Length: 500
Image (cartoon, rainbow, N blue to C red; front, side, top):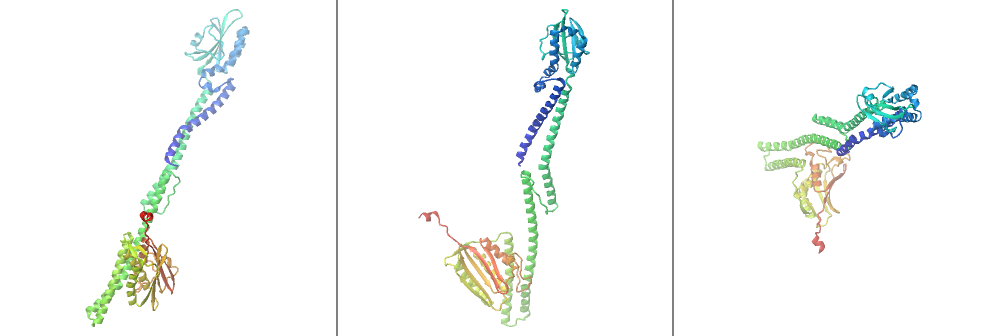
């Protein structure tokens, strides 16, 4: 989940979850408390309105008692002079946080509970009552109270008033408890919401950051052998994925650097070994010339030719080293051009044939392509491919009469070149690796089978850069066939020629 969505959800949680939970708790507590109030005080009706009008709630506490006393005052006023009856009514009122006051004329004949002087002196006058059980007079002074008044006439003709007084400071304990419970519930809801958000943010943000911090420390210490798993698909998860890719890239680069250094050391060792043989020969023959060992024109000519050939071997090794450096940095210089297959390979065969003839190696050449077949290639680099393959074949010829066959075939969009020899062959276990750099199927090294070990890897690189492919088949003691394909040149007809 994206952080944008998480922020929106967090906002909704902060706003709506407390509101929802507070509303749920409020209605639950209100329902429970109102049932308790109804059972305790006999209040009936719409309990929800009481919270917006506490006076109405207090007024309903004494509604039934008010109606009873009202009937007595209207029909049996003499009972209001009975102290026992008044005490009974007062006890009922005390259960509802109220008490009774009876006035005859201007004299208070019954006071059910200790009352403040200001209340007693400011009681409404006779005739102020409206005869409504659900209304009363709010009196504010040293004592806050809701006063309901019932006016009546005593049997002796005296005017009387009954006052049902409900003290506001003695409000229902259940209401106070409800307010406390609501406040505590709201605090708990806010704490719960904060904990939810904290846990969510911690697991989705802090934990991945700690993993990244530990990963950065490992990389700082050079330890790349670990993994970072993205546990989400948000920005932090994408960052973990990118960090893992970076770690893998660093590890690959480090391993590649180690392998490159190993290969460079191997190359230097190979080149040094292979240069040592021709240099030793050059020194030996040069000393022979200087010491007069070559005392005939024929010997001197032989010594000089040998020195020249060994110098060429050294030049070839140095050229391979130079080309290897260019391969490693992908800087092989290519000069691609259209080449007629028949003409190009005829020239190559003529050049190669002279060299093979001098080494008593037979050469057979077969061209099965059309005379107009063309390819796009670098003539110099393609010649290097052919010379490297044939040179490799010559190194491992073990027959008394060596033989090399070259076949050029048309295979659809490609031409296929096959170079076959009758050498010692390559073992099946070694065949998949012969194009790897520095790989040698023959571990022994001598002047006859020397070399840098990168010849076939150079061949593979050049062919692949031409958009082709190279492979080999071989049978031990019978020989090896090298195959490579290069795409043919095909003109794409332009729009004008199509329309014409």
